[in-house]
Image 1 (cartoon, rainbow, N blue to C red):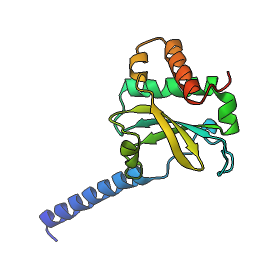
Image 2 (cartoon, rainbow, N blue to C red):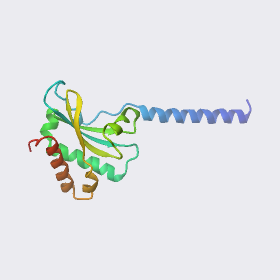
Image 3 (cartoon, rainbow, N blue to C red):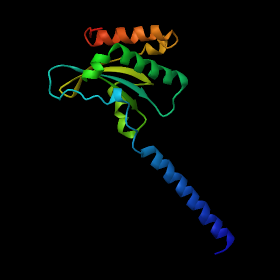
Image 4 (cartoon, helix red, strand yellow):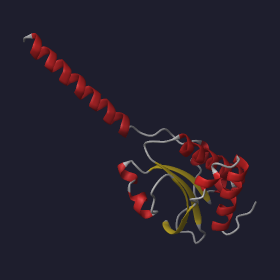
Length: 162
């Protein structure tokens, strides 16, 4: 084997390994979610509504998007600890750029990263709302941002207790 053939074979092997590593990284199992996200939900089929707070994001995440996610998560954890603990409310972080999650763009009419509240009954979406004003309130103080998320969430969930 001459040097040119060897170099070509080595380069092709390197490219194949790089592509394989990228694919493996993309499809590797996601790490276990934090305890707040692992709480068990009540058994399905209940007439009681269950709620989910989704933060939808893409592969590319700016500082503002990350801030909205962090403020939303911490606000819900603080204001709705009992609902999260009981499983009546669930926090769900979803990358809508992943092929399995692309349907969410159409399901919830997503144009960009969003905080969406969903009411589920019998395992199906009964209604939902997009808290689009998180993009306005992210410029406010964390307390004002939190007030918006709590108020909108309580209103959506029918006045969940404080």
